[in-house]
Image (cartoon, rainbow, N blue to C red; front, side, top):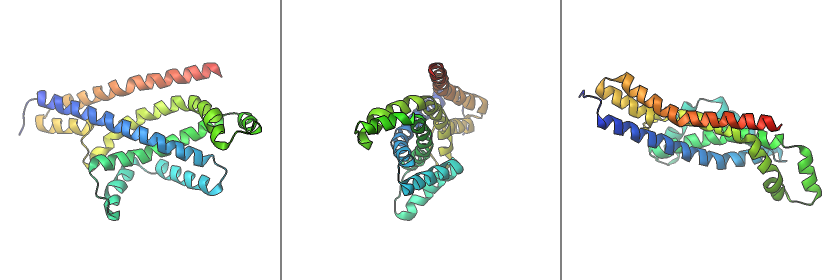
Length: 216
């Protein structure tokens, strides 16, 4: 049934914005935890752990996010885990974010001058305290700008979850366009919403990069 673009469509798009933001936060927080683990494994002394972390990164950076979502959505039921689209989208994006954040933070860890680690070792600090007290605070500062930049990409990447049935912002706009035959209005509203979310983050990332460059 065709109807005018009304309050129903506006509320649908608003609900899509909420779903997009919530899914982005879940994936970013989960990816942050996973990414830290991946970064620590990638920079560890053990060859096996470094290789496993590198393989994980290579897989998720070398395959389309859409395929990763399909593997989670259709793969988990094969192993007896019947999940809804919220869980599938969250797990898929979290794994994707873990790989990219792990690589970003691995670069930050390796950018910390080696002398800092050697000095901490000379003081008798354990590996845990070397990382927590010396390396990670500096690595976090160096990696903050690309981390925020990745968050922007993650927000936009949530649109792919519509393929597995997740109703986020772009899917809400698609539904509104199909019921009102006002695609320009529906997708235009969705584009504005994406811009409002992503533009401040992009500007913040640029400001962080300039601030870091000024200190170097």
